[in-house]
View: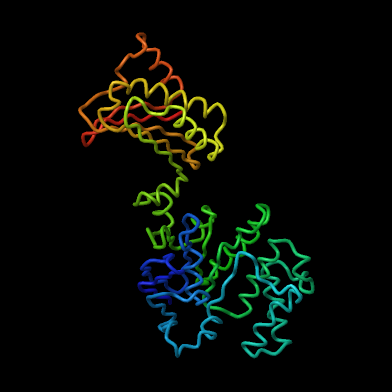
Length: 361
């Protein structure tokens, strides 16, 4: 139904989309996930030419959308879009928002358009709001009206650009319920969303986008349970990382601790967790003291919001050396401190690297 080949989009010197190639079949529900600023919304906007692609091709039912002879308005009637900010006409009532398109663009008689629109409003639970104006509606109600307005054009494809991002959490479920119903009805949909559980439940396929390309795609089970690529795994597990390189024994301890504190604040970690993390870093650095200066020592801290875990890793190239066997205090005091605040503590020597990993309690 949709074939995209080598699609690219630039805004001046900024490349937003890079060489996107994919095929979407009739009835598929594609959820598009990924970090902010990776081109997800631009991809949708290019599909219906709200943004003009810089290169590549887009075919809808075999029709080349970028051919200058193509009737783009006719294609847009088949492929409608629901925006983040509703985009309702504020000076028109709800029923008028739904009927203006079918009357003006499809030539439908007013009575027939109104009857069809009322039926659609019943489907989204808003028939009683037919004569209300957008300013009288909640955010969730506005978005449901926007979906009904798209359906009034009897489209074959609906593009959803983060349809719940502008809503209060209490209103998200009512909009997602409507989209779920459309998915069960066989509507072809592409949905840019940050609602991971929803994407898992409703999708036939999931695109993970990063740096302007479809970095990984697959079934919801594959993407959410067994992602194959590193960035996908980090995003799905909501891992945020901190890296610090120590070149020798005269490193700036205070600057490093300040950066770790900032990282913890951004992750909204509890005060006790921050204290234990700094204590763990200090004790492990003491155990690594004999190695400092022989090769750069890399400190990595990874926080997984999904699993509510905090992992600390020290890595350094060199000959095998297990810091956990050292006794810098003279009475195993450091190891006892470390073991008291960690769930797991391991040393490995892999690929000429000493690697110590610790997971905080």
